[in-house]
Length: 591
Image 1 (cartoon, one colour):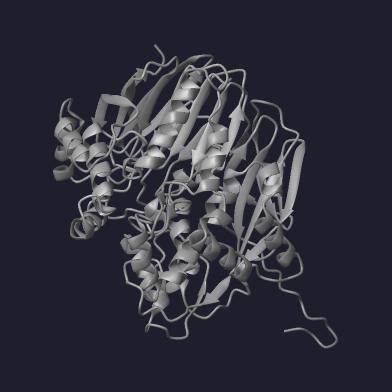
Image 2 (cartoon, rainbow, N blue to C red):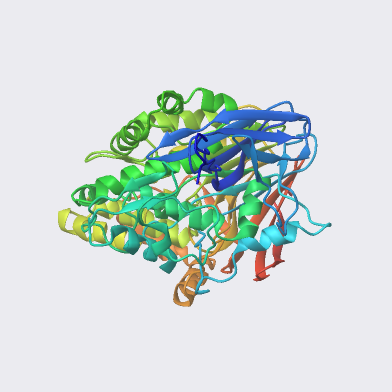
């Protein structure tokens, strides 16, 4: 107790790091560090004699910051620490991993881009095999390890529609009596992955402003994410639960793009699918929460400092927060517009590093789906992509969550299905075609035949040297299909090597019965009857011919494209134990 005449002792509450730090976009002299904190604060990143600060902005009671660190040297490997309101929170005491580093790019040397997709996390029951990202982290600790310069995650970073038991427990605890007055806090920094979900919900006693009252959600399926708040837990489980993955993401520059499971299976398959989903009473909160969470957890970190500076929504969110407000309403309105009017948002991005240009294409949210038009990209997005397809580089990398070049058999089956679903065989067959399309996930580039053809024309022009000097390689980097392979374009004759490199999954292997079917689909000659079927639906012959030359491989895996001058090769590695990566194959892309 205070004595007579004494002053009350002020209780100081330490600001905690909820998620991160994540090392996101890097250039030759800049690096971006992303964090989520449990309250508004000032974030400082210190790296030797360089430091940078940023204030958090608030979104639905959660607090985020992106710290732009400049003044670094090309190829820098600089240990860094993170401070919140002057107190160091990273690196954590007693970590088994080395200090996290800011790792800038050196365009004069070899560039290594590791990529993959489809990661289920957590997986406490061990249903999905060894986690490739965790194994990669342990591999990089070795003194002889070769590090990637960029980690590119090309979709399904989280699964919002197939919840792990850990996330289902959180959902049940949060929703409680289906709309009862429950309050929820973000996962406290001192809770381990064994903390029960009931510890994550209840009356807020921490003094944190990072909580939100749950809304009635009885209409939302129990095994799916309902809104932004539940998405925040999904990202925490994916990127924080395993210390190895958390360290990896803090020290390897990471770029991302979303795919369907980040929102929901078959997201934006067709106009009919969109009508069906928007008729559901719970869909608005889900799609708004999915897009707004993607914007803050993934998209902002994909941008260069200049790109973020030009982002009007980011600027507005920071302005609202600077005056003590919450940007939730503003970002939600943006997210709903982005879904209803794709032209109002731009998720694709491009970066150029020396002789390599990386173009990352949003093939989900930017689709053109109206009663009378269907495209993988809306008109503005395609115009942007067309401008990126230029030569005068050594290598053009095009990342799309969905493979541009499927196995020929599957390609022709999807193009046939699109034609039938759009009425080539009449209205009755169109209804059946739509049901098949949704049931069999027939919604890759091949199922958008006009878009496929437009991209093919651009790629051929680049590869023939009609848009500047021809690159040595034009390589599509993709995931989604839950197996890995290499396909090469064999016709028409072009100067560049045009290839499709697929790596999937990071952790979510295909059931064995589907593995057999896809092995058959990869065999030469299997595509012929499906091409005949497509011709019967009046689908024109594709402007490209290609074949699968390597694979398929069905294990969890990560691929690394290595670019040195005009040479390029790709290596696939799979985890053979929780901490071990083993090479599956290495193939030269240039000949």
